[in-house]
Image 1: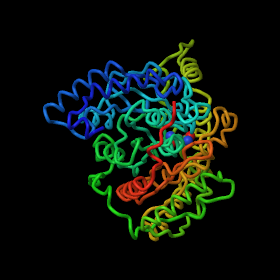
Image 2: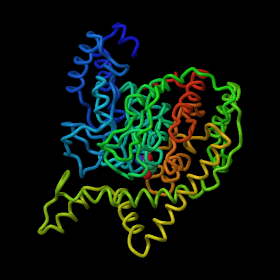
Image 3: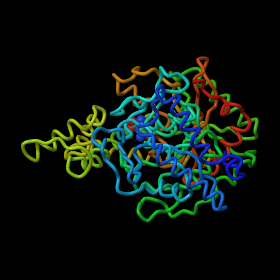
Image 4: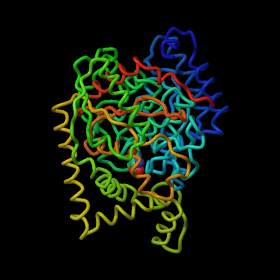
Length: 474
Ligand code: GLN
């Protein structure tokens, strides 16, 4: 696509028009978007075509991209799929979308998510559930389910998601696309609505590995407006694509291939590891001994941080207000009506774990376990250059299958959560299909700030397979 635009064989307005037509054709069945920005897209596409004809363009100029609806877009409603923000129009642009704007991208719209990014299926959206393009009776994963489904259903060329415990990688895996969570600090979180600030990170969801590297090139780098964004130099992530992977050590954590995992997922991931071996990589067994504690640790830390971050939605500063007879009643009514059940559950859990008397038992303990999980990765990366695991223990599940049981839902992230706790980068790439034609994802985890190696291995694998070429029939 990028080549076609640069050679002017096709214009951005034509590409954008065809994407909008595709949205018209399938969006009723997929519901990937909260807002489709048709008018803005038309203006941006015309502007991109002007840039391209004047010879000033980057690889993203004129490309239709969808943005998860928890990243602020100036003048365009940004809801976080929450009723409490349904009328919130940000007066400023997030760092990532500012970067994309400078490069001349075309915004197709804001995609659906689990409310405030809390969930694994988009069923917690305050508006509607997104459907999996491979089987519309199933969930697309979450919380960036709208972004992943939009990419898979060709309702955009690429998208941005955010990942706190798996929200880019798990939906990418379940929708058969590529999802990259960069190292914590690699990408500025300025203008990303905060869920759990020590874990949140923004990254690309794309149809292939090259597009992922292109997008990461644009969004990575230090930003003085986010003090957690890192000063590390940003390499050209496309430069490593095509380099061979001979001699690279691929760690296989024994704790990740466990009893109870879906049989077809297990088989596909093992086959993918064998394929990496065929390409010259060397498999080595590694151990991440504290894996069993990751989900519990995450749910203490993430809910604690969320309870604090979400305190700002009080009916005064942002979003909707429900009037009451006094200030307190106004707060209570605004929050009771504005937040959905999962968000309330997490605020209560987080408030509890932070309260005096429980702080040491829960929050402090969880921080200590987080340190152990980080050390597990440090040890494992002495033996391995990348770590390979399944992304999700199962393929996409049916709508409603886990909504009654939050614990079952939380376990959907068992393989992705430790990566956020350790702050290391992880990518999910397609590595097969089940007998019911549902996509399966392979997760590759790298050292801090070494997105290059996971992109390089992903690209080598992708080029040796046909998985990324399959499309859902809609
Ligand atoms: N599914 C996890 C949760 O519910 C992770 C969500 C995310 O990464 N934003 O918290």
